[in-house]
Image 1: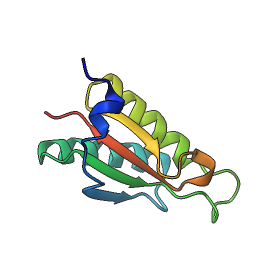
Image 2: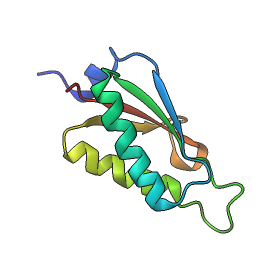
Image 3: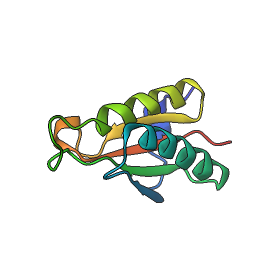
Length: 103
């Protein structure tokens, strides 16, 4: 059996991008779910979701945690194979690379 890590090596670089800057938590959750569903339907394998680092937020950035939790739900549903922070760590990244399971 092939591990997720081995399968991801064969995936292309991000094929589509979603920018969630300025969105509310609810808009980010709904937007992420719709983006994943639409991209899977269109046969895409790798996505980039930009959540920002919260540099212009009042207080703590909320979108990184909200979107990461939604991607975990989508993984449990079998739509997402895996995701990783673009620069290896949440605090250094403003974007998440998402690897989709095919339909």
